[in-house]
Picture 1 (cartoon, rainbow, N blue to C red):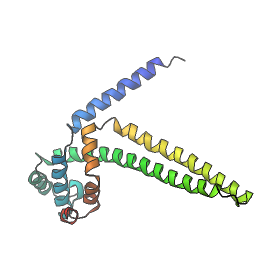
Picture 2: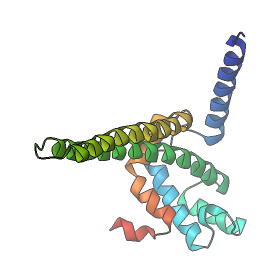
Picture 3: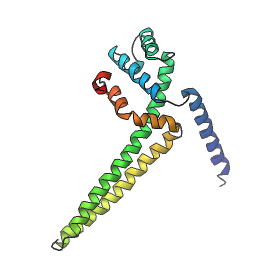
Picture 4: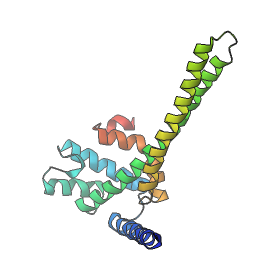
Length: 184
């Protein structure tokens, strides 16, 4: 079976989706836009409508404009782009944490295996644990990398870098803490 045509069509669809998402979601998100976003998200949450959903449209529009957005729709577009970038940032962070935990676990096992007085049964259990750590790491890393690759196609480098710089503040804002609590 010739797969060239289906593969070509799939690539064209991906490029079309990327172009459409880029146009719908606007340009790059910079630090100033993230500051506006956090102010708006904080105001909307205080008004009982996190993310501008479920509240009075006129009130959400006012909060978005007071935070510096042209409209509630622009805030929601920014929200969508930040959410995509945030998933990329969190997946990358997860990969780094996994790598660190893997190295720590393997170092501890290696330290135990270096002991001469270790019974053969214990040595085998440690070796099995080493293999499990490596296998689980590769599986989890592959999943996280797939998320990064899939969502990363729709996130530009500037947006990703801005969201990464402000990841903790964004997470705190979205988790329901007041802006003043984490500016201190």
